[in-house]
Image (cartoon, rainbow, N blue to C red; front, side, top):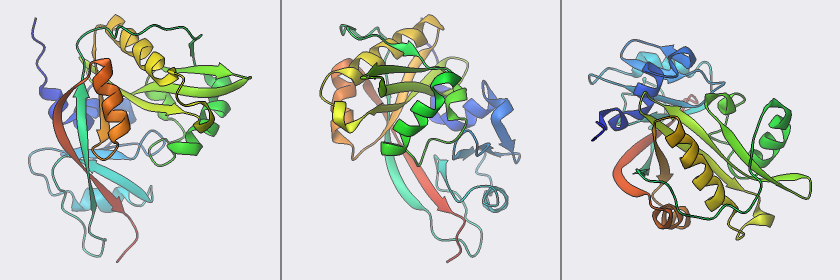
Length: 228
């Protein structure tokens, strides 16, 4: 059966409309994640985003609109454009899992935040881990690798926060965690996808080797509430 992928054309919007509607700040045709959960927003119907951006900027310093270029309020800096690749996979990853992978709970929260701060601080907020399941690998009594779920629609779940401690790279931990997370998403009867900056060539090659394919490019517009 072919699953319609329309929701992936505006994943932030449909996440905030479908599974994460209770995490949304709603400005009509413009929606944002509550800043405790994530710094992302989106819009539809060519909406004038300037008023919504001005209001949301009172809650968070820096954030992103995903998709078309938004209209920026007078006095704000021009947004910075990042180009991301959206990748998707429809089959189980055939990669051996030899490490013990655990589902992270609140008991692991401080370990998760400490690891995130090393390499992923801009996108991970205090409650991002509540958007989905997070998994980790411990070594030497220390959390050294994680992968989790972020945006979710009725049919798709985004894999996010693929992080390995710099002292523990090259051991296959990320591959095993991604394979484990992909399988978990399939067990929820949903399809895994992810986003990666087009300049991150190493991760892109990793995802391709695991079986992810490029679906489309996306623009991420970084907005600062600091005036010009």
